[in-house]
Image (cartoon, rainbow, N blue to C red; front, side, top):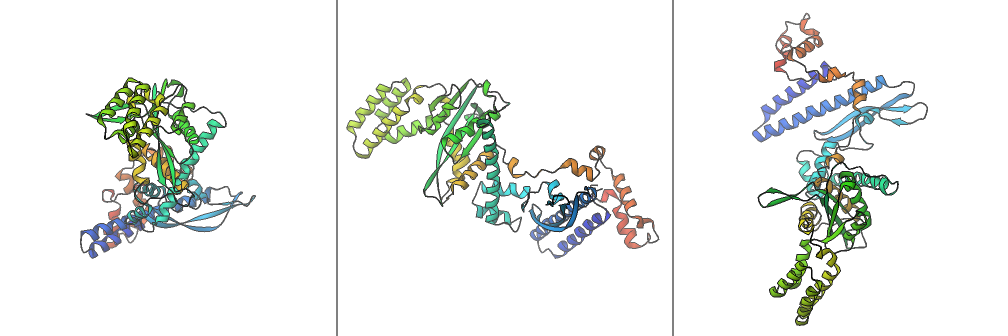
Length: 480
């Protein structure tokens, strides 16, 4: 049994005394609600402390006494979803090597120096993807005191670092040791779109940096009338060189899909060189200039000349580069100043990207990247006044990507308990795990645990009318 009768009585008394005080002193419903919330947090903190200390006691009893000796107790402060609490655990020293460690922290998966529990890490990280660190800390402080903007910043650095380390480890396995990614999903076609997002930098010689953003999907499927969504979407982002990011894309694609089953890969870009780098990583891949950026460049140069705009569009549709160039050259002769510069720029842009324009197959499926950039990245990283270090921008990019992929919790909640060891020392059998306790079980346990109920003082009012009521399971919700 994890909690003995002293714990049960302590919880009941703590709760009853606190509840009576709240009810008698609350001036309005707000104070009643707030008081009960704080009380339940206090009770939960006490349970967490007791559970940790009981596991620590069992670890002490079951340790290899020939190897590990207790050299004292150390207190640890932790901020949890129940608020800040302190628990004491034993520090051990290895008699042979002199190594010291906390066995409790080890079985609970608590990292050295960690002060924020996974529950708070998850909430803090998600808030940080939506607002500034200072604002996220303020929102959190309404429910959990002692949360500062620096705490939020530290959490983001830790989570972003974990994501990057995992990515680097997988890249090394593939590109250094020749390991083949083992994806499980099958797709005959994949669409990979890449786009750069300019972010303002701080603490750097450069004023601006570029975050590279990729969205990979199998196609588009109708979600509702007139609305489409990307099928089986995967998002990859980071502040790094194009080659490094394409290596990451390749590994992540290979980890999700069976590479040998993909018959066609269409790579979409805005005309910049680095998105075309993907052609080297995927066999038989074809580059396409995505429709959004093509249309954007046409409108920027020809917004005032509808006739020329229509002629250029028609020539592009026909795949006729000569006709496209001839039409633009005629327009350039008539134009002056800034309009002429934009037409010359458009002529060069179309010539450089013609290979990605003329092949129309696959193009109709592209054009998703701009909306994805705005939805997943720009809304947070390009807000008014936002500035990033290159490292900080890279980490936030990765966090936003994993949030879009639905995997952020995999990195924020990584405190893995050694469940089998805990079950063993707490003597929790498989039968005990599956057992569902009845009211009769609870009543019998309380009667055995409280022998005073049958002793010489059994007729006393405080026993007769208070403690005996505790043995009625229908009036007491206790999980044992």
